[in-house]
Structures are given as C-alpha cells and as structure tokens.
Amino acid sequence: MWRRRGGTFAALAAFFTVAIMFFGIGGASALTAPATLADQSAPLPLGSTVQTGAVHTDVKGKTFAIATDTTFAPFEFRDGSGELVGIDMDLLRAIATDQGFEVDVKSLGFDAALQALQSNQVSGVIAGMSITDERKKVFDFSAPYFDSGVQMAVTKNNQDIKSYEDLKGKTVVAKRGSEGETFANSIKGEYGFTVKALADSATMYDDVKAGNSVAVFDDYPVLAYGVSQNNGLKIVTEKEQGSSYGFAVNKGQNQDLLAAFDSGLANLKANGEYQKILDKYLAKSEVEEQGGFFQLVKDSFPALMKGLWLTMVATVLSLAIALVLGVVFGFFKVAESRILRGIATTYVAIFRGTPLLVQAFFFYFGLPQMTGQPLSVLAAGVITLSLNAGAYMTEIVRGGIQSVDAGQLEASRSLGLGYVTSMRRVVVPQAVKIMTPSFINQFVITLKDTSLLAVIGFAELTYQGQQIYASNFRTGETLLIVAALYFIVITALTQLSNVVDRKFNK
Image (tube, rainbow, N blue to C red; front, side):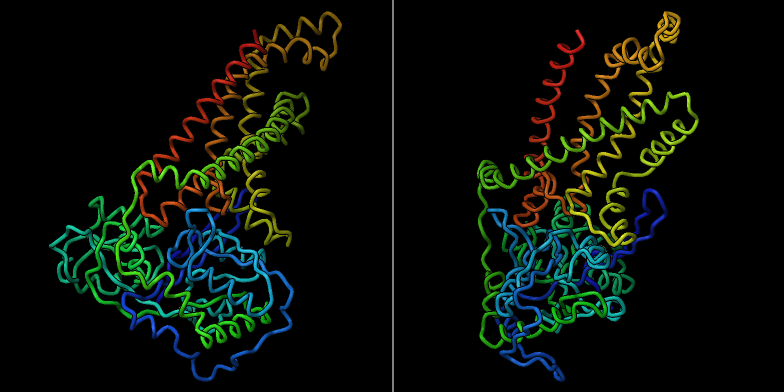
C-alpha cells in the first residue's frame, strides 16, 4: 500500500492526554518525459458520473478553507514573491474559477493539514495526497488528478551507485510515510540496504549531498523538479509505478465541494487547461542556473521581512500577556492562601512540564476538536507562547520576591503597614531590580520560541526560510540568512532592554 509523506504523528495535549493521529502524505508523481505527461490528461476512470461542462450551483459564491502542505515543489511551494504556487495550487484555483466558488488556502504542512481537516478547521485538503484504502476509511476522495511514482537519485558526481544492486550495505533516505519510503522498505531485504526516513525533500537531498546517505527515494516529479532547480542530484533509475493523488474531504461531509472538484477537473481536462498546468511546472528539462549569495539575499528579503514582522508581532503580544500572567501567578505563589498557591503551582507545573510543541498542537488542533471552536494560527500561537512564557515568568516573580530579605517585610509590618502596602512599597521595588535581567532573558527565549510555531503554519521567520529553501534547495545559505536576522534582531533588542534596565533600576 502506497503512501506519500507524513506518516503517523502523535501529540499528547497540555491539560489532558490527547492522542492525535496524523496520517502520512501521499506520493508524488511522475514526470520526466513529455510522453509521460500526456498520460496525465487521460479521461476520468470508467464508471465516473462526472460530465464535462457540469457546474455545481450548490457551491457557487461560497468560500471554502482548503489546507495544503508547505513545501512539496512542484505541487505546492512559494515563488520569489512569496505567493503559494504549484500544480495543486493552480489546479485548485482553476477548478474554483470554473465552478464559481472561492478558496482560502491554508499552508500548514501535511500532517497539520490533515489534522485541521479532521477538526473541521478547513473543508478539504489538496497536498499531493495518495488515495489509499486506509485513508478512505477517514476521508472521501475526488477522482484522481495525478498518477504517482518513485525514482532514486544520487549526487551528481557519484559514479558508483547506478542501480539498486549497488546499494548493498549502504544507507538510503526517503520521506517519512511516503511512497518512496514504502517502496524502499519493500526492496531493502532483497538488495541489502538500510532505509532512513526524514521529513521533507530539501532535507533529504541535503542528507545525500552531505554523504550521510548514498541515495534518495522520492516521488518522481519532485525529484525531476529538484534536479531542474540544480539541487545537486541526478536520477539513476526508471520510474516505479505508484498510486494516484486526490482531493480529500472528511468522510460524509462537504460532498457538494467534492462533486464540484470532480466536475471542474473534468472540465479542465477537456479544455486543455489541466495539461497546461502540468506543463508549466513539469515540462522543463534544463537545469536552471542559480545566482550568487547576495542575489539570494535580495530575492528572499521581502518574504523574510514579512516573517520577521510576524515574529515580532507574536513576541510582543505573547510577552505582554505573559508578563501579566507572571505577575498574577507569581504573587499567588507567595500568597498566604493555600488555594492561591495551589492554583499557581498547578499552572506552572503544567506549562513547564510539557513541551512547547505539544502545547502548540493542543491549542491549534486538540482544543478545537474538543470544543468545536477553531482558532486562527496567530491566536493559537500567541496563547501557546503566552501561557508557556507566563509559567516561567511566574517563577521569576516568585524568586525575585523571595530573594528580598524577609526582615524587610517584617520591619514594614511592624511599622503598621498592611501586607499589600508593604509588598507594594518595600518588597516589590527591590524585587524588580533582581527580576529584570531574568525578564530580558525570557524575552529573548520567547522570540526564538516563535520559530516552533512553523509546525502549525504560522508564517514567521523560520517558516519563511523553509519556504525559500524548499523551492531553491539552497538550504545552508538560506538558513545562514535566517540565523543572521535572528542574531541581529535579538542583539539589538537585548541592548535596548539593557539600556532600559539601567535607567529604570539605577
């Protein structure tokens, strides 16, 4: 049984133990020759009731949220201007135009896209998703819109690996849960090699170029596109037949949208638009020349600045809320009331005792499933960062207050001042000076933690970097630019915070 990427991903929630099953991604498909492309425009399977020219009025004028992957060129990726393009994206938009509905595309990553669909945050998923019997138990699929396949590639200068027989005793890499992984595992016993699974194509290609693996098994149009983008590899085997891709909705739901997709697909195949979309991304055979490092900086600058802005927005909002939570629960921790201390202790234990990624998955996927109320990715991200940073700030406040000599409070009380007044006028001013450096440190940590929100599709700086190297395969250079931006911003903000600290606490 063929599957694309993704595999099964389990997440344990923050407040309760929530098991969330992520389904793997379907396989990519074929193309290296025009003759193969022509096969993709074949009519729909026998028995299909879709008629060419049909338009479903049930969806006309409606807007549907559709989830997709973030990095699966040439099916979905971002171009130089940051726009989400690719075979899936062009096909979806063309079908929407043909059928008279609108789409709001959510670029989440494949696992996250499926979870968003299952929690009814989106109406459908299009992400190079293979149609399998296992998935049919959970989702309803459209007619196939692309036929899949697998090929093997090695580095350009590798003259030793030319076939599966040359892999004996070596390690190959494939996408986790993909058709490539399934196929590689099916033949590894026969040819005596080991299979390693990674998350995305760009990472796999880098693994081969770094010498950690000798070959990569990947969906063949993805490999062909990567080679055309000068990813440093060459294809050495013929295509192995795989399964087909389909558009998916939850089982028994959004049947009008599914029918409209099938009708639109039939219309596009009939009028030739479908083939034009394929040729746009897959007909290239020449290898594109890439510009230098500074050209890469120039080309990626707009997208990275957009990501940096969202990083700062999420950081500022999260820290403002976290500061309030830290102060409130910090005072609870040193309160005389056992109930208040218990509440604060429980809050800190939960959010310091669970990983930030688990919390992000819970608030974006788990909580909407439990309550039926979806959250935007920004809201889920800010809630996650706020509650997490607030727990650490709670301990900073507690530690700052308790570090002030207890005799200070006793002396003020002996002078007739009440507990609240003594804390406000005597203890807190001294504690603030002790707490400020730790607050600055937490500010930096929270800013860097925004990068983890890329897993739920928040388009911050790290996310934008992933989009860039997913399409140009210049991973090292792109990550160097992203790291430099983080370093510059964090250094500048740290210096600013230190100036404020010196003036405020002098």
